[in-house]
Image (cartoon, rainbow over all chains, first blue to last red; front, side, top):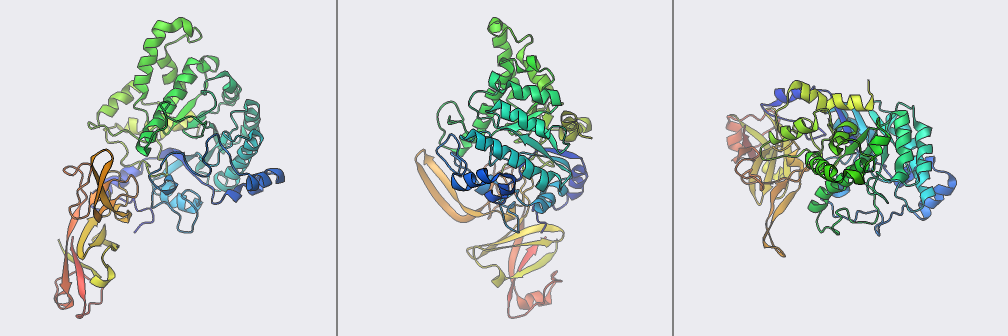
Amino acid sequence: MSPDGGRAVGAPVLERQSRSRLRVIDCDVHHALRSPKDLHPYLSRRWREHLDTYGHRHPVPFVGSSPYPKVAPALSRTDSWPPDGGPPGSDLAFLRAQLLDRYNIEYGMLHLLTPQGMDQRNQEFGTAICRAVNEWQYENWTQKERRLKAAIVVPGEDAEAAVAEIEHWAGNPDFVQISMVTHTIEPLGRRRYWPIYEAASRHGLPVGLHTSGFNGHAISGAGWPSYYVEEQHEVALSQQAVVISLVCEGVFELFPSLKVVIVEAGFAWVPSVAWRLDRQWARMREEVPHLTRPPSEYIRKNLWFTTQPVDEPERPEDLRAVLDWLGWDRVLFATDYPHWDMDNPEFAFKCRMTDAERRMVYSGNARAVYGLA
Amino acid sequence: MARHVVATVTEIPPGARKLLTVAGREIGVFNIGGEYFALLNRCPHQGGALCKGPLVGLVTSREPGRFDYSRRGEMLKCPWHGWEYDVRTGQSWCDPDDVKVRLYKVSVEPGEAVARGPFVAETFAVSVEQDYIVVEV
């Protein structure tokens, strides 16, 4: 058996192999700490002791766990636990074999989900965690595997500290974007976050927003859901709120070259959000006079969306209509490896694609957004 | 179609499975309460290694707040997206008519018959004292 277990077998194997030779840039890969102590070498003595004594504390009454039920241990494919131990995503050699080599991944964009520095209640500790995470990513991942690219994680609730973190890493080719959590104290379009967008624009670094973080509010805006199947979709609702805030606050008017990548929320919802915003904007334009263009124009100019989880409509071709409206240049393929809802590059899209469209979605768009050679 | 000797019966006790490659195909052979089933190790949804997934029961509900748990250990759940398949039929629970995993015919043959052939058993030293699991691929 192959270690990844996902090898296509039987008669269609030749067809699959030829498709897998397509170059893939995977815009959502999750690495992980093997142990919380992995950050020790990158923390000052003070914060090391703080971590060991107090640990991570977020604005939710759950420590070391998710407030939502999850379908699989570590949220991961059950075949993604490294044979030499540690949680899924924590073993570079296994990640290489099971993802990068197996699927011909040219570049993988790393998004670390835990720990987060940005939603720590102790903000100074959060700032120290962000720096430690960035050092850890650099030494243990991007320097050891050139196909992997990191995001500068920043303590975004403290814009000044976040900008300092950006300045520290900007220009280092191992870091190709800036990342923040998405469940924030205020919606991400608000003024308090603008210095971060200014720094991002100035350095030409996209802001990658992977759904994550805790702000004490239920993800839905309609109370706490009972089931994971609810939360799984409400991730997209919360990302819609992020998009709406960024557009309506005028972030893209102020920073017209800013690139924002919405990660792991799908994309089929984007047209309906844009249509509604355009309709309201036509009627309430004087409330937001700083928006000089219909909201859909900012969405199709400044925002990109990773594909996973690709929607699977009953009529697969319906997805083409969504992409035709959105623009085939707006979507970036992502697997979400090693998570249980990973998309396999060979099977994720059930609709037809021309070779040109396939190249855009699987690598060309990401190459342009992230400025990769 | 050839008949391949894949295991001795003692190798796969009830509730156990064996993963192997037969004629270039990755196949999982399962023992469900003494009956054997062989399935292609590829989920028709996105190609996950289905036969490495857990064997679970079937949870159904007649109305919210009530549930039934049946078919213990007879549903195979993909280790990726959790799609469930009936090991006995290969049918998916969500879309049994259109989404099915390939099933192969399995039989148990005594060692004497296996020694006589015709079977493909290159990797086996066949002993007449044992019974063997044979898969048709």
